[in-house]
Length: 473
Image (tube, rainbow, N blue to C red; front, side, top):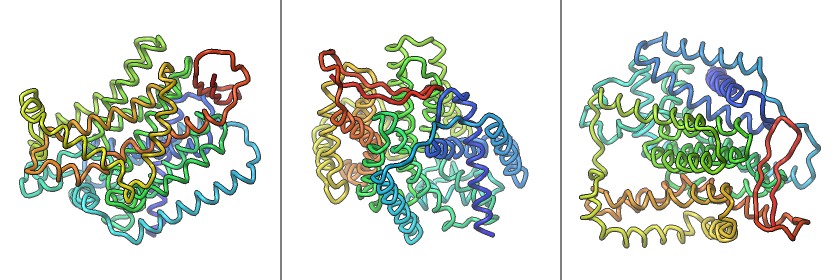
């Protein structure tokens, strides 16, 4: 029965996400099956968790999951009626089949590791605890939870995308089952792999490049086995997958006439602050990149409306916390110029700690070394707005994360850094893989028109059968 219940929970979530996907792209872009699954999961998880929260403001008990299920099925019906057009199939090469087998084996290992390990500290006491409280209270978090100082350790101010996705499973299971809740996190790993493969094809124009780079995600210890990894039940890896989808869609949306990907970018952008509090920083960076693309490509001012859903999520959650009299987080001092000025002395030690993390081979292996090579290669093409967006999306959050520790309230701010820096860097790690894919494709492509000046990247996705192209001088 548990298997059938999980199938129902995941099925309704994917139905909702697929329906939203069809509404966003409006049959203007051809999507591979892996892209459809990946975006359906991300949009579905975001939609279901938001619906549980919003509907929970008015109803609770058995009526709440039924209302959400009705919306999910309605969206699924819309998706079935519209259907996302898929590109023409082609026969996979032996090399691609081999890479696909490697990826399947890696995914199986990640699922196994997730099932044999318990949820980590944050997975239990920041996220699953919220799902359990809500399930025991008819689908809504008790008002006392937010103002109870005895529960401040569980960060009541954190948003609800992950715990309410777990809550959706609990509704279908009829009980709070932590083992079943763990299935969510390796699925995010699968989605991350699918996105790297699909975006790699769009960036490079050849499927084998994405298939070649994506398996290396498995060999980054921070992503697969370290504290806060994809198997530990933390929100950091799901947040990194949402960020990957956001930046990848913006890269493709930077092409003139590709409005479908811009709408998809706006949807993924809105979910960043709903996954984790740190998502507000990523939202700020991704939104700034979106503004740059709109201005650089001379889009209609109406495209700025794509930033509105994210602002509504941020403001709505803060208003809700204020209404619930939620305790203020105690990890950081007030963010103002006075505090910044009195703590500037922290910047050199913080910079040293961040630089040391990049050389932490047991945690990152050679990942950051490879990314640094990719950044150095692409830095010669900073004149291309899409390359600039990709590099900014990778580098700017790292500096902002460094800056927030200037406001740490811990007695030893370096201990604060040491406990969380690797998880923060994981937020941008998948974008680092995109940088690597673009750099590899740039090296492998040979442009016959060597006399042309400038370098460009064209991610072509439309209703026609055009394919992505990478142009090099």
